[in-house]
Length: 106
Image 1 (cartoon, rainbow, N blue to C red):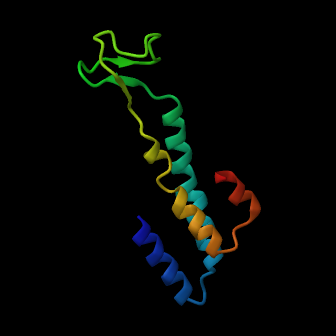
Image 2 (image 1 turned 90 degrees about the vertical axis):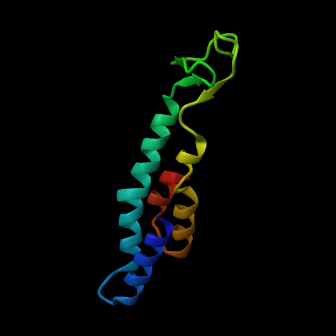
């Protein structure tokens, strides 16, 4: 994804008829932000599952472990939520993105 984004920005820089800031704004608002918001929503409503028996829980049991005694793991990982965050911050620093859009992911 990062290679595709960089190639698109290089192409936008070469073509005089294209506004680079508008390209970055559209990529951020139409692709990166909705993906981050959707991943955050799924992270907040995720389930837990047992690594041994595969049982799934909506909420963590009071004991903090599965009823079989094994540890529980999250079904959605933090890395999927932060996947595009560094890329979005980097391109926003290179280009003049308006404050409202910048505050949406800060």
